[in-house]
Length: 112
Length: 115
Image (tube, rainbow over all chains, first blue to last red; front, side):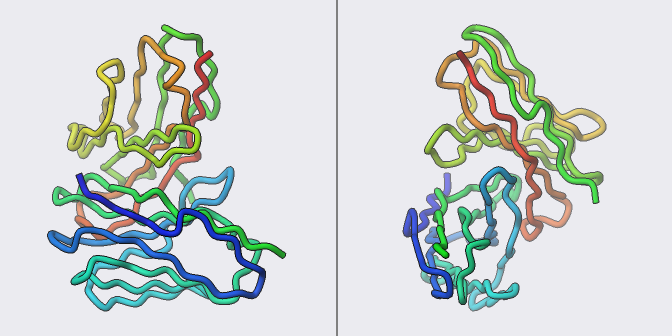
């Protein structure tokens, strides 16, 4: 079973602030890392799928980086907006690629 | 575009009853995952299927069983329900044919309350 850790567990920021949080994972046997956004009363939606060390992905004000050698990924949100409030989950597929192991998530609240 | 459909959305059962949760993945998605999220807890992986065969098993109690059918929909059968089974049950689908890079698409979840 993969050990996927996310920090912080929760975060409150003011509208307009930039923020970032971390997903940590074992660096051995790395295959891919997924980031999902989970808004209240909705189902999780994929943000990024990252596979290569040094990968950087961007979608609007949200970006992510990946360091497979040291086993972490950062998710950045620039100029946070209230609509960014959600739980952000990272997940890694197992060696069989059939199972996704999720971290506990970072719950972001953006205050207007 | 069609999404992942879960039914029912809400279910209330009494202790020791049985429940069946259904998941209909996006067409051509051959891999289904089931997750359980209790109140204030992390999502816990229960079980997954690929091409109608069980592929991985997580923390699924022996009282639960699941299967994937020829049309790729999946059902989670829960018997002898306990209060601790009250949770949000998510299913997710993806295509396993392209390996590890494909994202998962989640249903809206079934909220099961056992009273």
